[in-house]
Image (cartoon, rainbow, N blue to C red; front, side, top):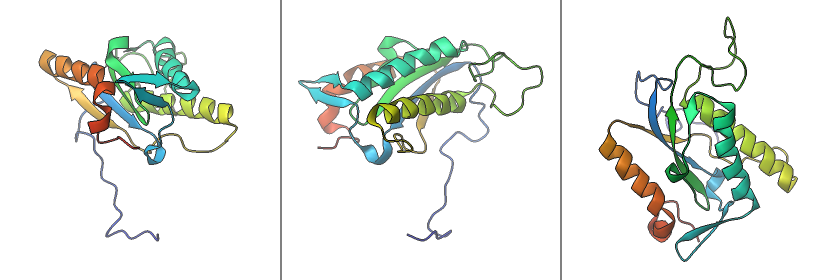
Length: 178
């Protein structure tokens, strides 16, 4: 399909003017390219990860070891057949989210933010998955991602419950594919 600027215009889904590098909790959803079921299957309300799902799991928690400014908890993360949900907490805004030592005069890498975390995570998982499948250059993730700034304890509680119950509710999920 040829590009038509009247039909094909990308609008940001981020909050206008919001600084996504500030300390706080963020609910993140990443979907696979074309919503392909890559990471395993739901059996009796339980997610059974395959090898690709295990790669995603490993890279998610590896991210917190690389990026000291974020915190990731087990009960705030779920891998589904074609998407993941997780809560990312930014703890400190004096560290750069590149996994490298802070620079005196930062250039190139984005200051730590949700987008830099997501970009690094997607890159690492895509590289490992493509190496495992011997499919260099294949897309794994959709281009964008969904996020929600968690503003209070009630939202945090509700989102944690949603994440926990997601596998059980798979057949009614908007991302469900047979």
